[in-house]
Length: 236
Image (tube, rainbow, N blue to C red; front, side):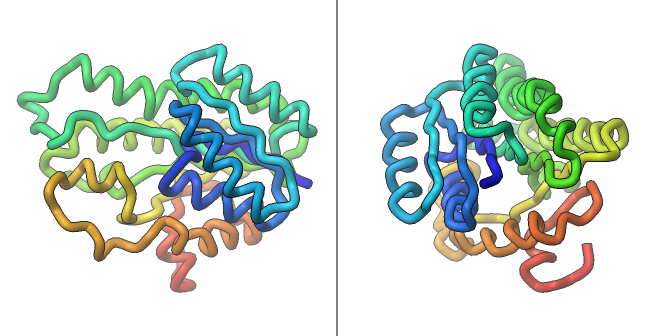
């Protein structure tokens, strides 16, 4: 059974992806900052999956926590897939760059850029040992490529991790490295981005799981992936 590390898996897209992979026979190592929510998520996933789900509560910005994720994945046989899903939006409502608090910006970059790269560095030795099946997925956003007013902090952080992924793909040609845009989804983070706005028209996170599983099955070359394109069958 292949092994996946999925960060930020207690709710939203991370939980949906974890449940989808567990249902397809993957062993999972999942994390989130809230221990109780993470344990509840793990129980829900295990109730519908045959393989183990190892819950490791903690903060991805903490080196000891990242090492614990790798140790648990190694205990299961070593990671075949790393999904960097954990992230933060930053201040809500989102301020323009002219008034963006720099301390908050540093935290946004630490969580959305530095922590994913640090976890990639730790996972690379195991991933390189199985290049035919190994992959790195980093969840991104259209805010990384579009200039939305108010999205300067989050969007620039996502642009940075996209470029880091692009360079990683060039440096590790034997691995699959994808930066994946799931589209607008009905998640807590998306609600935080639009406080007071009804976002019930956005699709639920589980609606993109078939596209994600298709990505893993088809294993296209490294690059930027829009899950909406896989859902509709359109070309990337």
